[in-house]
Length: 181
Image (cartoon, rainbow, N blue to C red; front, side, top):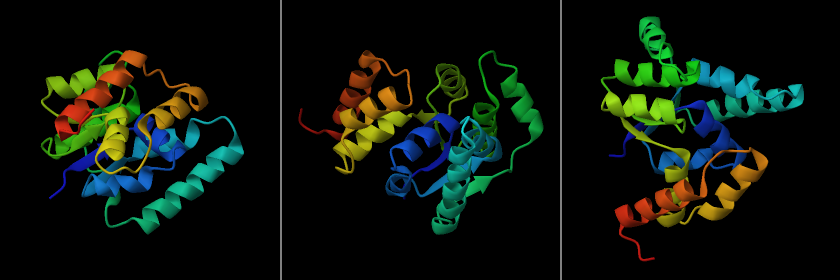
């Protein structure tokens, strides 16, 4: 049985941009999206046409992949408030962590922001990030070119992945999978 995941906005945006979101079902049995993550995904772009395009995409994606890609709204607002008290935490991250806590941390949280990752770690939550997902898709499944994807994210979305982190994540995944250099 594959693990289950809760997706944060940054990872959703990156995988959407790279057109790789559909491949998450090769890694996870279930992927949940908190309502605030959906809202951030839809509203973060200044262009109304792009927001409309994202809305259509997300609506169609939920319909086409409803066996594993699910909306989640089961957590209490008190948990979100507690997480929002952490400096640097945004509402999407807070809802992703609250959702996972509500489910007794049985999910893996996919998030990239340092603060949210530290909080997840301090709570004993399994976590991963976009780079690890891309490295796995490249090394284990041959479904993408890790460095080409990272280059696109850095140049087209202005992601702040450092060269050191990019290399370290790939090497860690390579070692984890036992693939030759």
